[in-house]
Length: 243
Length: 333
Ligand SMILES: Nc1ncnc2c1ncn2[C@@H]1O[C@H](COP(=O)(O)OP(=O)(O)OP(=O)(O)O)[C@@H](O)[C@H]1O
Ligand SMILES: [Mg+2]
Image 1: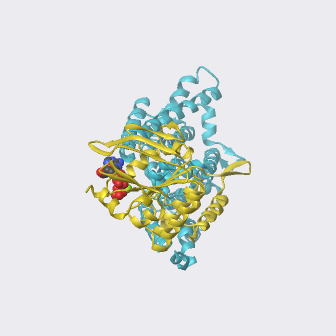
Image 2 (image 1 turned 135 degrees about the horizontal axis):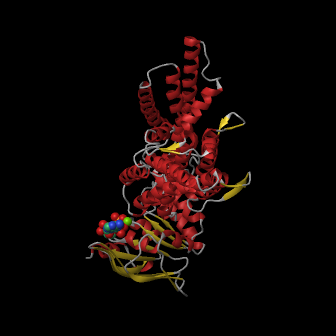
Image 3 (image 1 turned 120 degrees about the horizontal axis):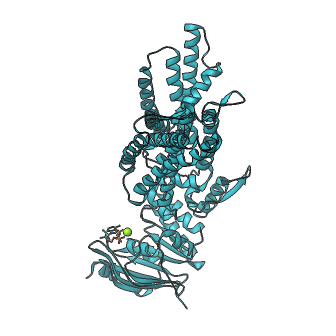
């Protein structure tokens, strides 16, 4: 079976800082890979190299066996990689529908002119939020929403576009306990549909609830990789702190 | 969230409609004053309306482009002298070509050349801001100086007269003997800009860039190219304003647009745009430009010393920002 994603020897530097050092991993369809590591370990940097935000200085990325090189996030999205960023990436001044469809707005014709199909954006956004069991005002700018609701919008956007590979950078960090459960449930559902998921979290409970494999980063390097069924929290923590 | 629904519908309506109401109030004020003190009408005199609209043409053309730039989180300080540069260039072209060819042809040549001169300024602005990441305030301030110098050089320090009859007919003619042609042209631009901003992806991306630039980039929007285009649009409209100036006054002048730069920014702000980016509309800007034009014309009409208009417009700007701040509290709280 070819992995849906393979990263080989990725290295990314910011000036003098080596944020990511020679990291390799594989990911198979329907598999959940958790990235663990201390603050600043390089987790976000790793996923940004895959989602087209950063171009790694060294290393290669293969999507279903073919080498890819994303020079911007648009190319990664076009290849079926959706990302929920730690800092969410919502346009606060736009409403929920506009955010779900940002960059891929549906159009319709009126009076012979192409116009944004706001009604469609709103109704599709409402449908996708319903699947997440989230109720929010759809006609308000998202800066009027709570942290959890904003998170739901970002997740809704990613699942609406039917990603083959979904990257979630701390998707549960801003959420209350019931919403965290919902996200975990959702990950199981997407996994069952064959979506591959990279999941970053500081919460070992969440990690063990969803992950098939756990990759631990330490100061930019890979400290270890374990099957979730063959390890336990203590071992992961030891890898995280380099003990 | 529930608070939004709890805040009084009247307050929310007022927050949205205040600039319309204010315009209405200004017109009523001058009407009452005119009737009371010299038994004349302010509003129901077509000449007055034509004068107000004509006075609004230049600041509005500048403000329309400025609206987009400001929504995207930028600002363009160079538009005033881009008007002047384009005005001088068009007058110069006609001066030189009128003896060689029919007036219509010479005018038809002057238009694209003057617009290109304007676009040149916009291209540099766009390059500085979008590619070299120069802060918009600084980059366009630099081009304010460059366009100013180029305008005066091209005009050799003088006004540049032209007696091209087509030019003057376009600047001073009327449609159906009623609607001044510059007003008609501006109205068409208003409609196009309103459509672009409110109904197209281009407009949506303009808001997104102003709301969260990084989100726009990650959503796959080509923010660099988009920003370039915004400054080109502003410059194109400034060039158009320059052409109209040369038409109306049958002469180009490097300082043609100098006094309206700040009026144009004021119109955008009164219209509800945020200088932090992310908010604003074309209808708001049109209302803002009309409010300024009504105040300026109205004060002259009722024989108040013209200097009062600066004070009045200044106060309206401050008032509009205060309303805007309480508006966001109404919406958020
Ligand atoms: N754009 C950037 N420019 C410069 N340095 C950066 C940049 N992004 C990340 N870094 C640095 O790279 C290192 C790894 O950061 P990264 O954000 O990947 O950590 P992380 O594992 O996601 O941490 P956290 O758990 O706090 O989110 C840090 O030292 C950080 O300061
Ligand atoms: Mg991170």
